[in-house]
Length: 305
Image (cartoon, rainbow, N blue to C red):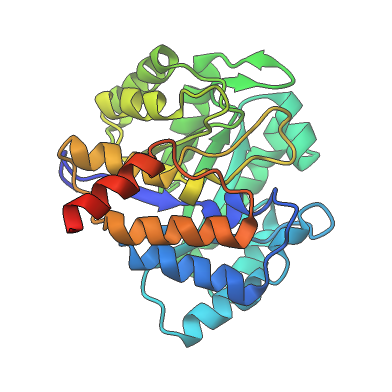
């Protein structure tokens, strides 16, 4: 990966749909995944293997994986898992990449996983060992890396310690998650610069929410610090049901447009991305769309005429 290449992982089919009142069918979820892939997004988080009582929108994720396999789907897919049972379900469904959530605060660990920080770390270490044997890649996402809705601001030293521990343990990637969208660009720039300085950029990524309208500014700050991997969500879908105050993820629509205008390579076709964004809005009825979507659609239409 060159310094001018940025990898976007669209988490809309998981993080975006998990908090929606309208539960999509398996076919609708697959249609959304295929539309995002058709736009050239290189990685897509297609679902999670979590408690269906807690997150009913993620029921039948194994069917989503099975049908994508039947359709010879080639875009890299991943699934979020909360524990060893989730890992086993993901592995049995054919997932080749999983995201495991770590926590930078005790309050969030208890609220989201009903475990302590130490317990989630122990589970993740066990999963890492098994995944290496199973040849499954593991992304370790550090939740509330900047601020926790229960415990307040997160000390950067907690995040750097967790990141170092799990990179050394063999995690394929560490993602810093601004779970409730409370981070600001100076925080992001400083923490990302510290981690890039210690570990290099290749295995680091960021995940931002746009609660305080700073999602795109935080992407830019991370980009300046050397980060070249970002999570985002088609049409700005998102929000964590276990994190009070979390709103939609930063929109793939906006990130892709900004990066292309800055001369970065993403491999994304903006016209096709707008089609995927339109589909997300039709399917959910609630997706806000990227902040620049109205302008971008008009610009693309004028350019095509």
